[in-house]
Image (cartoon, rainbow, N blue to C red; front, side, top):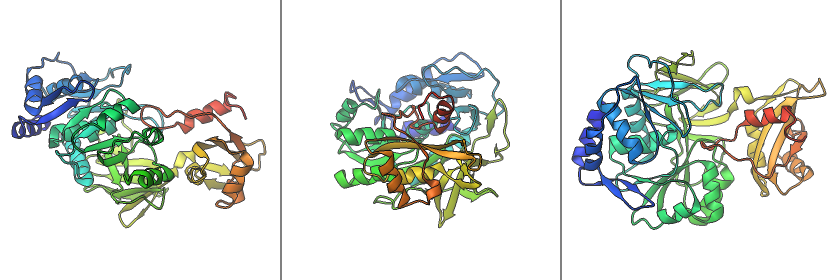
Length: 418
């Protein structure tokens, strides 16, 4: 199915540019990529590993589609899975493991096609507006927003080796408008370095919550609206903020994508049903992913077709029997003009009556007293952090996420000073 769709796209745009290497300037037409995929010989195996950037990634992927083998995109250094995929599985994604142990997710071809269609329609991706590929093609976000739109909808891709400021300066010289999908950490870096390309006509942020202050700062400086996008490896795109101006509520993820149905379970967690939801986890199926439905651990509010995220159920902090989401405290902290980044979590309290203390890691030049005073104007006193730590930075991982679980573990192991 996917290969036939690709053949139709490539045949209809045979002589048009499909892929460009931003650094070398070399480009390939749809016809050239089609010919390369047709001639690629594969060793017959249950799983075809796919990695790299540009043609190194696309050619073996297309060959796996042609031979109806299971493709498995891998990050550098990532080990190939050693199990046999379930019947009908044509693609494996690595989960981000934010909700537990790492796993693999199996997809049928029609599920990948549905994800691509939902994203292209919701975002208005267009062949005259190529995607700039600075995020990993192997990650679910890059695969869904860069690879599938190229191969199934004819959206050209400009491949970049790294999201460095000098690479963005090269992109600014391109003679056409670009769509730029990235993660919040990259948008912050680019904004601070004044390198967001002026030819960016569509800006997308996913992988982690987009700070409202960053969204507003970019808009005020350049008039560029960064569109928040919520998705998951298990189900593809979920919600997208298509508004032309910055949001007024940081918890707003956006409106559900066409074809996506969102609901809440008894705990208030988001459940997603759509044709893009994956088959199952591998090698061990789990009940929260089956039959076209993915049950998340994200607490949410649904209103008028919009999704408002309220944190993860497992991250809630218990302060003397009262529950608070760390996301709510982080959102307030990020409104402070001297806060560059922050992370909040709960840790066992020495006062047994409190159950947990609220711990705040803040990258800032402000003091704990001034931050506490700032929060006291917005939050009840019991939600003010009792423990303040001031690291010089909190690097995000390759997927744009800062692991609350990791920093909490380091704190409990006394590897972070209290």
